[in-house]
Amino acid sequence: MTSKSDPSTDAPLEKTGRFAAALHILEDAIAARAFPGCAFGVLVGDDVVLQGALGRFTYEESAPAVAADTVYDLASLTKVAATAAAAMLLAQRGQLDLEMPLCELLPGFVIGRASGDLARTVKLRNLLAHNSGLPGTVEFFRTATTPAALFQACLELPLQAAPGTRAEYSDPGFILLGNALEILIGTDFATWTHREVFQPLGMTATGFCPSPALRPTIPPTEEDTTFRHRRIQGEVQDENAWVLNGVAGHAGLFSNVPDLLRFASATLGKARPAGSEEDPCLFDPAVLNRFAQPQPPEGNSFALGWDTPSQPSSSGKHFAQHSIGHLGYSGCSLWIDLDAAVAVVLLTNRTWPDRRNQLIREVRPLFHDAVRKSL
Image (cartoon, rainbow, N blue to C red; front, top):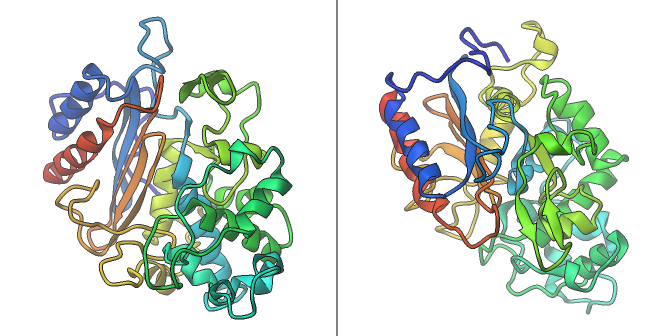
């Protein structure tokens, strides 16, 4: 990423400057136990104008302090930073046809179904747009103990609506999409995204399945008392993704603020592979614009892989309608205003020590509004 003002991750935060109100919101959120700590960053055009961190890994005073480059479990930000990114690259290379029926890549999706079953009409576009008719969250992990068993259960899900007629945010849809993309790329998803997305953009801290040595440097997401019966730290929190060995189309990615700002810069057409000004931008603007358009039915905020601002929106009141973003269940978010060339990253572990706390819903729009007002 070409940044004229990339601040040191160890530099002290200026809490009396232009972003004072935004930082005050995050400090209040930590005090209210919305989350124990957070890392954040703001990109405007070519410039990183804010990058920093507040709080700790957990609420204990002895817990490590969060740094601007602390790696977090991104949860469903995987859907944009890995899965949608892969789909965009494959589309612009002519390797992915959005109108291709899913069953052409995953025949198991229609095996055993009646010849007129609507499953035969589900296209890759429908999976990206969350309008495939598949259900939302399904706890496959309750009965499926292997990747093969979980994937088979996902293939056999009945549709709850005709494709394109109902919008329902669907993790199973992205599990299937991740597998379909693996068929297209001919290798495993983690290897391909590292080689084709993260490495070219210099996203050195981003990937699936952090090594055991790195786990203590990642804030924990939960004290799991019902499934794994241990502290979840440095391994994916999402149970379905965990059964899938930590690599899935819907969850499993880990990253930090500097890397996600590089990704945002590439999405805005600023960052180039290998840092070369002569190389073309990673994402073709025409393809990105295609993926940024809201999809049917009317009122659906989801584009292709991405979300767009709804009413009300976690992005607040000042992101243009021509904006794209996504949330992660663990407490992470990325919003990109394509008109203003502004991107905001907020990473937290709001699910610590359990999942009941929902204060992040109040914090996100307040933080984004304060950031945009400061600009």
